[in-house]
Image 1 (cartoon, rainbow, N blue to C red):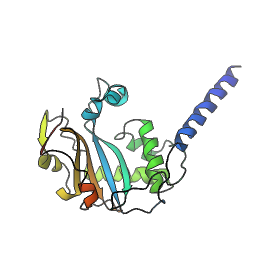
Image 2: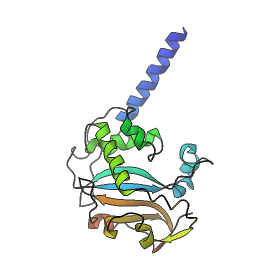
Image 3: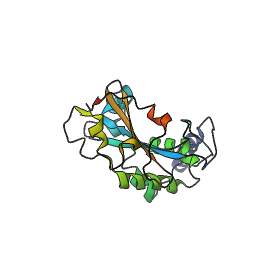
Image 4: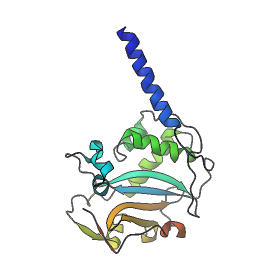
Length: 212
């Protein structure tokens, strides 16, 4: 009886994970057909101040002190559109690449969502997609000094200096005056490029942004 119950439980968990992997849409575009990448970095303190963040102890618990974390690596078209959900993908499997990525992408649901929605338009190989994220983070960093700086506000020009890329390769995104995300534009080889005009238009922060 116990064995039957355990088997049923595991079957249900696997079915649930598979279902989550399939819940991606609408399908738009073809795998590999895009112009450049956006490395999207999220400022965790701002997320943790939201209702969703307060319900996420994995990222926002009392003992967590995240600063910049990775939201995702997004294939983009230069006109401001993007492909998504290009092909069915399996549930994320544990590997060296996903283990490394999970240190900067907080929570298994985020890894699955990014793989299904964005990674599926880059490749059909899970570890190749997460390997690209790991390479970009290793090369560019996550502004590690910001969380310990105790700054409540920072000029956008000073914020951009935390990454060794040209200023025009970065756009900064706010909710009100509070920093929300930083986007870094990269070519398909993960080298920084000037952000296209369509992405620059989304840069909506004032000259100085809140970090609290």
